[in-house]
Amino acid sequence: MFRLSVDLATQELLPPASEVGGPNGRQRRDLGLRLQWLFDNGKLPEELHDLAHCIKEDGNDGAHRGTLSEADAEDMLDFTVHLLERRYTLPKRILDAAARRAERSR
Image 1: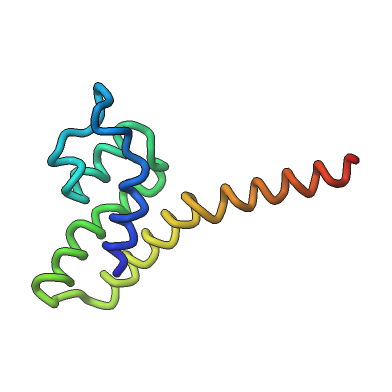
Image 2: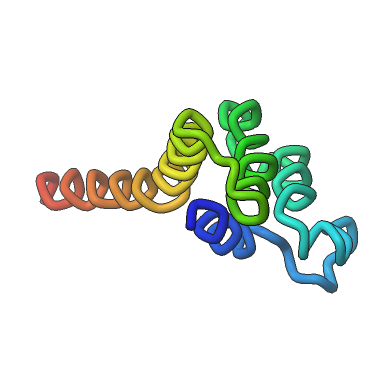
């Protein structure tokens, strides 16, 4: 489920397929290649880069081999939580704070 969450959350970060310089078809389909493209192009925070390998490697192991350890699952949880917080939670918190400030200044 972590891998699916990351897959869905990162697809919307891609530019339209018609855009020049965007990812190729394989990078769009393959999560590991897509993550690398997103990091290389500044679409994901660099602080998450080292932890991102767990989604590709551990996600594949868990889905296909069933050899996922507790530590591997914790790495995947950490990456997924941090990614989703950066993508959705933090921007909303910033908007809410700006709205509160605007309301107070009236």
